[in-house]
Structure formats: structure tokens, C-alpha cells
Length: 451
Image 1 (cartoon, helix red, strand yellow):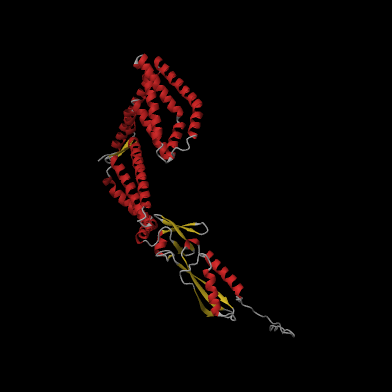
Image 2 (cartoon, rainbow, N blue to C red):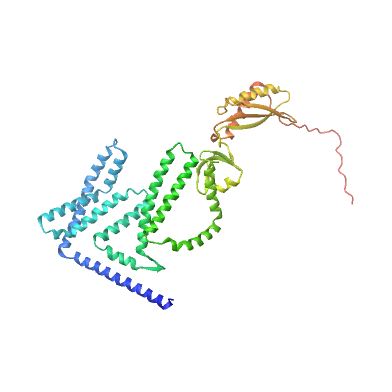
């Protein structure tokens, strides 16, 4: 059994190893700097700076002309113009790489090859950095692009300067061991690089597959959402596990710990898990799908998107409600377009007793059918529902097939058509009236309370 003294001794040995490797790396860097300060090497540095200045001048002189030439190519494809724009942004680096390699070729032909050794290193670095810039332009995310670019620059620089192996030893020495797994800065960097590459690949495959699935009209919208989410989980899960395995981390040792953490998270995230499961049920039973018009409580709108945790519902006033999936499973939802798009609407009105009910019904049906969104191929009916205190009450029923266009506005248009039709045909819409009579004579005196 290990004691505290053993742990302190192991930590001290690790610290001494880090100091030793760091000293070796500093020694190599110091030797490299001393080599750069030699006379002919200083000449090569001066030549490189002069070539950089010349590249800057060429960029200032030729840049506007190249840009004008590019601006005249309106008929070219967009991808070709985009490539030209990227090249124009890096003209200085392109000129510098061309000039320095031309200088290296001339120096190797007219003098000893060793006298262009430092220029060769600088030219190789410049060409590698420029290549990395062009390749990382394929990454759309600006943050990920910068991360990959700087990481690739650092790796290539260490590789060209023959400092990669000492740097790996230094990063690997700065770490600690847990059981059979050693965690270090080198492992962290490798994990970031491998997982970054795999996640980027998974994102590309997910977007490509999703676009093809959404373009397939034979698959229903709800099944498209379900398949896309399954593809996302599969690709990202595979990227994570492949990355962990590539790093040499054994996941079986973390099984017990992950199980305990999973139980704790399960108790704390019951609602989240319930919404996730409800979302899968909604997609499987196809009760709602993107584009459906639903009513849930006071919310009326159409389904904009189905999320893993919530459903996005957009109302007529432009508000977007994020309704948890669990509410759609447990609550009473009115789906106005579940099996078909036809919706029947009812409005109520009343007319005076002296108006002929037969004429009222005929005029009301004709008025409703004169509205644009009211369907004429489905029967519009009008019935008497009550003999009220001051009016004969009717119900008018008509059909529409575009509930996404709104319900309140179509009801208002039908009411307005009824008003115009009743005015033209002399049909009155009564309203309650009360008469107040004031009797003449002396007002009765209020009773006096008993003392």
C-alpha cells in the first residue's frame, strides 16, 4: 500500500523530469538562436526581409489592377470568384513565397547550397503557412477555423525546425496518472485535434445526409425530422467514441463512474428526459408535423419546427412559442390540419322577429359564400338555434382549407358580408332595449330608523 511519502516522491520525480526536459528544450532553442546569429545567416535574414518588403510593394502596385480585372469577370461562377477573392487577400504572402523560392534557386545555382539553408527554412515555413491558410478556408466556423489554423501553424513550425520531438516530451512530462491512464498536456492537445477533426467530419456528413433526406418528398416531414435527429446522434456519438478510442482511453474503467453520474443526472433532469422521450413519441405517432395548425390553450398557430426538447409554434402576430414536448403529449391539442386541411367554422347572429327566417337563411348563405376563402364546393348551412328575448338566433357554418391564413380574419370578413347583405335586403339586427318610466307624484319618504 502506498503511503504519503511515496506520492510525494513520485511528484518530485515528475517535477524533476519536467525541469530536465525543459532545460534540454531551452538548450536546443539557444543553440538554434546562436546559429542564426552567424554572419552569413544574418545576411540570409536580411535577404528575407528585403524580399518581404518587395512583396509588399508588388502587392501595393499590382493589387488594384488584379482587383479591377476580377471585377470585370461577372459572368464567372461564384465558386471561381470566391477563390480569386481569397487569392487577392493573400497576394503579399504569395509574392513572398514566389520571390524567396526564386532567390533560393538562383543562390543554389551560383553559390554553395549551404548558404541558402536558412532561406530554405524560411521559404518552407512560408509555403506551409500559406497552404494551411488556403486549406482552413474550407472550414465555415470562424472560431474553429482560427483554432485549426493556429494549431497547424504551431505543429508545422515545430516539425520544420526539428523541435517536434522535444516539444512532445515536454508536454507529455507535464501531467499526472490516474490508475492506468496518464493525463498530460500532450494528451489534451491530441484530444482537441482528434475530436475537432472527427466532429467536423461528423457535422459535414450530418448536413449532407440531412439535405438529401429533406429533399426526398416520399418521406413525411415528421419522419424526416426523426431520421435527421437519429443521424445526428449516430454521427456525433461515433465521433466521440472513435476519438476517445484513438487516444487510448479505456472506457470500461469509467463505466461505474458514468453509471453513478447518470443516475444523479436522471433525478435532476426528469423534465428534460421526459421532453426528449415525448419528442420521440410525437415523431413516431405523427400526431403533429411541421406546417400543422394547432391550438393549445390560448395559443393558436402553426408548427414551425420540432426540436428535441420543445416544439416551435408561430402565431399570427409573429410571436414564436416554445412549447415543451411533454405538454403536447399530456395536454389536449387541437390539430386543425391533422388528417386534412378542411376546417369548419361557426358564427352566431340574430335578426328581428318580423324578418322572414327563410329569407334570412338564404341571404346569410349567399353572403358567406361571397367571401374569398370560404369554400363553395362544401355546403354552407344556416340554422335557427334559439328564439331569444329580442331576436331569432341563428348559426352559420362554412368551410375553409387554409387555417394558416388565420381564423379571426375570416370570421370578421363573413360578419362584414352579413352586415352588407342585411342592409341591402332590409333585415335588421336587434339589440336589447329597456324603457324607464318615472311616475308623477310625491316620492315616498324614507323610513326613519328606531332610536
